[in-house]
Length: 213
Image (cartoon, rainbow, N blue to C red; front, side, top):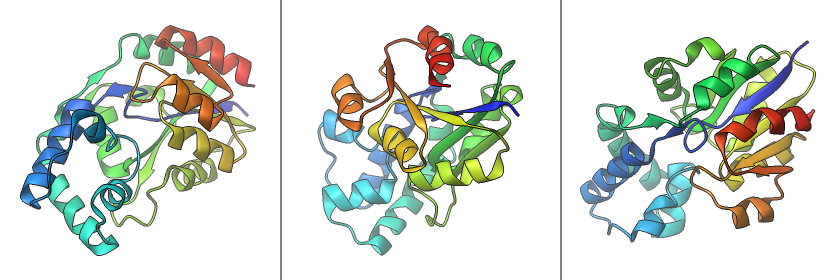
């Protein structure tokens, strides 16, 4: 059996900040919530939206779910198209796919993740695309990784991601992890989350993956 490499999507394969942040601004305006400063706004990228809405605005679960529906009004039409693939990612995937099973594990709804991977032309590299369900029952990265591992057949796996949620989700599933610094996280976040390997650039991924097994 091949070994499995799980990739986060936002901030690891794609720079999706424009589409996500435009969707967040749309949601906050529609719900009458103040739009925070840029650094705080960036905290919406990575974790489930309902978690961030609760942390920043004190929204209840029901209020958060209602806000997420508004977010999806914009994201489903416009935000999903406002992204770019990080330079060098396709070359890395083309190299890794010869030795490993590659899959996506994202907190983004699976419905959207599959559309995105198809739209950017990377579907041929992945054995599976796994994400949150639209009901919110499977939204945390720990649960998404567990779900992905349950669907895939392999001997061992590593998680690649740019935020602490990827690293902590890997640990909860007894996986090694690779933290990338070209996305939305930073080195301090990766150190505090105790990523097994930390890399600064896309072209470092193949060697990092090799070291992880």
